[in-house]
Amino acid sequence: MFKGEKQIKTESVRKSKLGKKHKCTRIKTLYIFQCDNCGKDFERAKGKIEKKRLTNFYKHVCHKCNPKKFAQQQGVKQRQVLRMDASSDTPISSL
Ligand SMILES: [Zn+2]
Image (tube, rainbow, N blue to C red; front, side, top):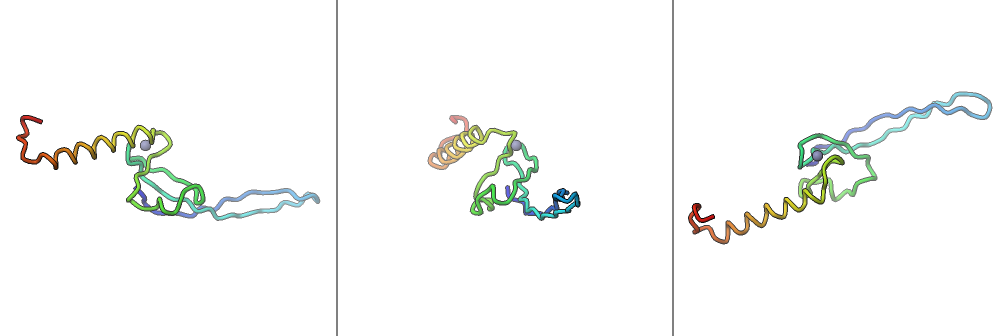
């Protein structure tokens, strides 16, 4: 599930050739997702993810979960729903 985006500041100090310290501030944009498998929030850096994926039309799975396994489970679920729709007059006891 896509939850939104946030911006974080990252600071790094670089030393120039003359020994002067140089502070570099960069703004990073992160996208926040909720894993559709385990329900935990996770973040992805902007640019590492396709813009078209920033919608709940797509499922989002965190790095701890196996997206392939998740996709297979989704496929089974969808097939089960379709089969039930196709045979809606079947008594539940025979399922
Ligand atoms: Zn997960």
